[in-house]
Amino acid sequence: MNSFVKLALGVVIALVLVLPPPLHAASGDKALLLGVFPYLSANQMMEQLSPLVKRIEEALGKKVTMVSAPDFMSYVERTAKGEYDLVLTAPHMGRLAQKRDGWQLVAMTGQQTTTVILVRKDSGIDKIEDLRGRKMAVGNRRSVTYLQADEALGQKGLTPGQDVEIVETATFSNVVQSVFIGEVAAGATPTLLWDKWEHVNAEQHRQLREIFRAKKPAPPSFLVMVPAKTGQETILRLRESLLTFQDTPEGKIFLQKSQFESFLPPDDEAMARIDPYVHVLIEPRK
Image 1 (tube, rainbow, N blue to C red):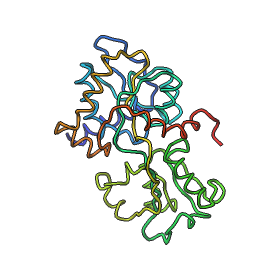
Image 2: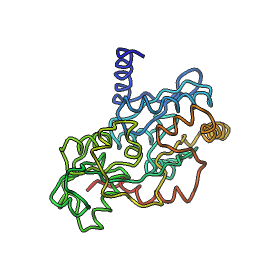
Image 3: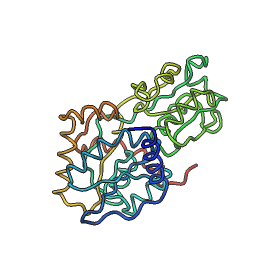
Image 4: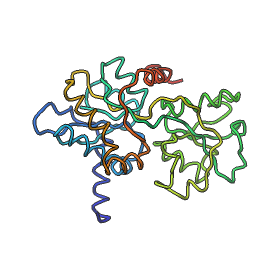
């Protein structure tokens, strides 16, 4: 694919991610809307998730268009309104949709949401306590990643916003970039982006190091879900396709590059581990 085509596709995807999506396709040859929660840039989403979109299309026999939202809460609201036909969503967003709006869980990723706090290797920062009076970048204060980092600071006697200045960025990729160029002293990001970072930017991985990693057990990183009215036949067909994706050459490559590890069937215990994080989506942010 030449550079012009890549640029054109990037612009199209970027517009889709920013502009409000249309109401979901009801039937016929209209494309289904896969709502992806905004955790990466538009170009990264297109590159990483295209194999998954193709797998879903094959399972359901319909065209699937990948869309997102400008921010976390817009995405939560659009999910609640039923503007997506299926979603690849963050754990606490999916849990809220399940408990409040009846969304049904199809599968969850084997990769779990674990937070790391990164600093530059030459920063002289060795532990969380060294962040007092400094800046830390986060992707979004309503993310599970931030909540785990907030807890880590609190355990060391640091209050976010007082002892450590919190800087919100557009994506978790921007968090790492902010640390790398020295805009902030530290950054909290998911291991999904940090582990095997050479797939995205090897230089950043060489120049940064972690001073904290959240302990497991942790919630699954992503959930694939469908609206309450979706029939069981469709759910089972899609679930079977996702659970066996790892048995195909394309699936193995996708799961490795995306760091999803695998797709797993619904697990009530794993879902219960998400409950402590849901409140930030329904309570006013402090």
